[in-house]
Length: 224
Ligand SMILES: Cc1cc2nc3c(=O)[nH]c(=O)nc-3n(C[C@H](O)[C@H](O)[C@H](O)COP(=O)(O)O)c2cc1C
Image 1 (spheres, rainbow, N blue to C red):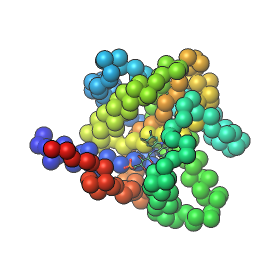
Image 2: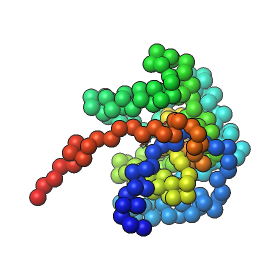
Image 3: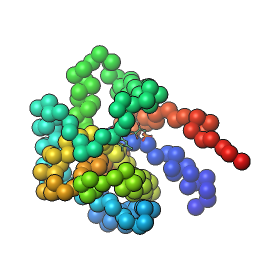
Image 4: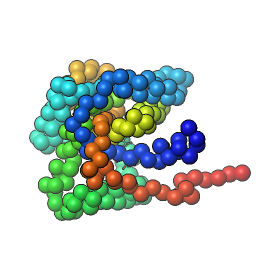
């Protein structure tokens, strides 16, 4: 593969939030996960674990998450995702991204019902047949999370090579207790994130969403 093709694959990866009702073969998932396991990790600790949830287990997990969401349960993730409060410029980017997605989906800013339904789609996994649950030893530290992130990105790119789409989901980790109970994970596991995986619905406009990126000069500082 030439460099431009490889970089193009990276740049073309964007979250997919609508999937076809079509299974993903275990062979493909195994091949992608095996390759993704070549991700770097501090001292080769490979701290990641992933539970691949499909079929009845997927439906059970989705039902449990939807029940928690519908009951208005307050999300209680195992770890704080970001700075509290977020720096103003991060907050602004998040807001811009959210509003642009609502606009594409035709959801008015004041339409709280539609916004809620949009949030709930996280827990039906946007119709994806597979949900990956990433978990770490309880009490894991920042470096371990960094390692899991590398593993996750490898997975998303590997899936793309097969024409599959994905969406990483902290929202799922918000109901860490529900995830643990539904999958029989012990209290010794921290839920890092979920990830919906499936065949993208090419007719869904939501799958064309590409949030704006910063110009190079805004995030690269050169020193010669
Ligand atoms: C760790 C992580 C958690 C995320 N959680 C969610 C989520 O719960 N729901 C969702 O729709 N998108 C989620 N996203 C997707 C981001 O919103 C998305 O990556 C970002 O807006 C950039 O868009 P793109 O990936 O399509 O280029 C998450 C992304 C990451 C990396």
